[in-house]
Length: 252
Length: 275
Image (cartoon, rainbow over all chains, first blue to last red; front, side):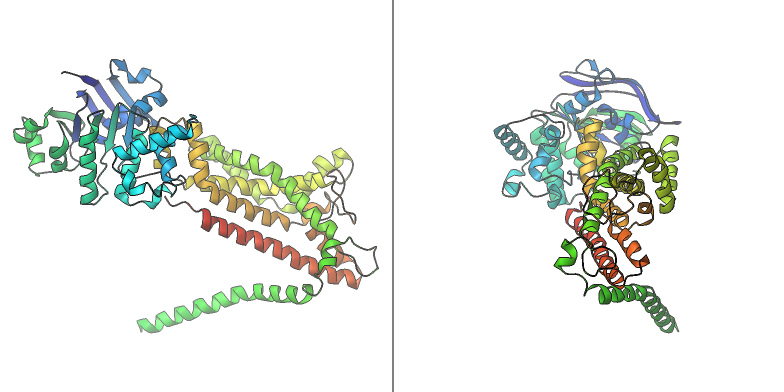
């Protein structure tokens, strides 16, 4: 595959006695949107949590196999450095409640004690908020708490907070599942713009969303990768029976 | 029938509420009645007269109370927050659970026993009563309150917030210091203020540690007076004027504790962080 940024090799993961992901092999292309789909409990979230090593924070978590970020095994990297390269946005919008909008965008720098000049800060905040199309809405109220914004705005603020660190990969865990249709649409439009400079992996329950925005689709079922390919192909003529059933709404 | 039952229940609730609040109003009433006439600027700003003479004030006790609170807070607030974070970190492990039980036990020790312990540990070793030993006794009472309020506040902070911070490539210690602690600040502050309110009214542990003194004293190695202790000695004395002053002292003490409680409520309201 041309321009591969991430390679998942013979990867299994789970908690305690429970194996959630079974022997996953997957390659992610650079500057594309890859959607991960599948019924509840199939391990979608676990998979992307493994990519920035958030999975290992949970109690009794284990994993086998390798994940390469540009030929470097992430399990040999410092997780703190990895997480700056592989950013994550969660299901529920969660700006830091004790920080202003301005500080929230810079949270990755401020909390880590990375010193920036005022002018540099202003530039990062403005650029990042423009990227997520939030600048015009909040430029006059940058010093209000982040939680003051609406749900959709909060989620875009959270994406901005991750983007401010200039990651190579952006992981999104059902980022629009708690948002209204208009905010969902805005975020989808935003992701299509962002992929010019960024690789995006999105977990979604929403089949039409995946078909609208993704270039590649991975379909997980009971912890196994049953189908992976270009979106046009998977959505029109899936090879696996389970994928076909899921896409036609027979289960989910 | 249902409406009838509803009414009976409502009636009972009102009756019981009145019964439980009534004593508080009586206490306020009697203290205000007897104490309000005593309090004036001279009472607050002058030192006691020798026994038997009328007049004089309670400046020594006011200064003493604040000094004792200051000593106790200086040790127990940083230590208590530190231990609270430790317990929060270790809550799922045996050692954390055992420590929590010990802290519960420490909180349950009667204050007079803590006074005796401070007497044996410090007063006997130093050979004399001192403000420091009184502050130490109050520290032992304040410490478990600070620890528990810190831990319980931190427990309420959603794990999502910690995960979010880690996912931004922020190290764990910084996450605790810069995300978890600031978010729990209002709860911790209000716990500390309620704790200070509690120790400012303690008498028993001061009887044989701070001991009391009629002089204005800022030296922590010398005996010192305090409001509750002054109430105790003045009430036990045979002088009418001192009895009167004890009421004034009681009113002042209640005002201090009440305002601490009100301030803590305001802090919680103002600084409350919505998740």
